[in-house]
Length: 153
Image (cartoon, rainbow, N blue to C red; front, top):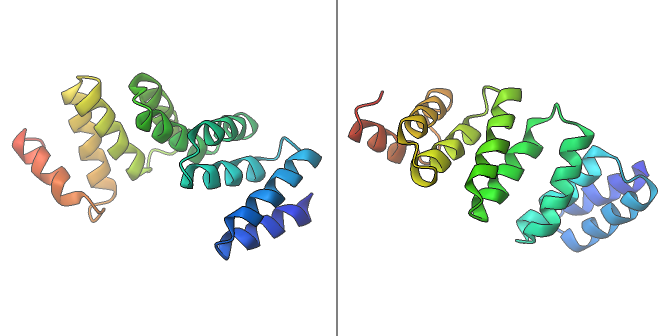
């Protein structure tokens, strides 16, 4: 099983996602409850826009290793893309409970709460936390503008 995972990872790093997915799938046949296999395959599905398949494997990964916040963060992203904002909020909050330094997730929580769940105050707090953790993030200027507009620093 480990050699298949290693082959998959090597192909993934080289940009050969078809081969990588093939080896991850073979690995799952031999051992369906391996975090790395499920997470990495889900990530490849996600990068291709195959959200249903990605969701399935991120859910498995989150059950196999519930102490790893990245699975919950990805689930939150998928639910955000699917306009399932309460589910997005639930999974994103779980990710930051595990890792309270996870700046991109705080930004996504800001988006979900401020723009979609009609909870502007909480959304602004999440945006502020994200900016405090990662002041030079790609959308820092937009976040600062939004916070200044609502007088939050």
